Image (cartoon, rainbow, N blue to C red; front, side, top):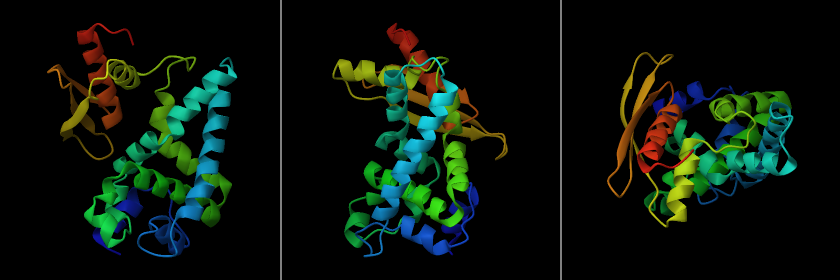
Length: 225
């Protein structure tokens, strides 16, 4: 295994017994006939089941519509691609030459599908409980960041929807620095709008730092979270 692949396996909160399942989960259809689409189909269903159950228990007073909206925001392609990027999943994807040249390792759809394929592979390798633990581990911060009651939007979502409503470009989040040991890091992030407004945030994860920066931008724009 390459050092990059070894690093990916170390940070993935699951150790495969059958490494062939992981290899298949990371293989795009452009690279081999033994690709990850069937695993992605399985993983998509498992993800929806685990997240739905978590939301049901976390928000006993939420309506069916509210639960559906929360689930949709958590299992959508963009969220999956964000998690995959945090894992540096793109660095270990097996892509065909055409996809490599076109930057497929950064494409949200390919990253999201590969992550779902990993969920499916973990289920086949270790069973449902292992798959559930992996999903909950990767989604822990996002689940904890849901507002009490689950009905309000987080600052990043509010800012994005406000900009989209005005047909303005989405914000850009840049990682400025990372401090501390691996187990207790602090992330320093800047949020920039095309109109020139900027704000910085810090947090124990990049996502938390981005949320803080987005909240500051909302204050500048005088938009209620």
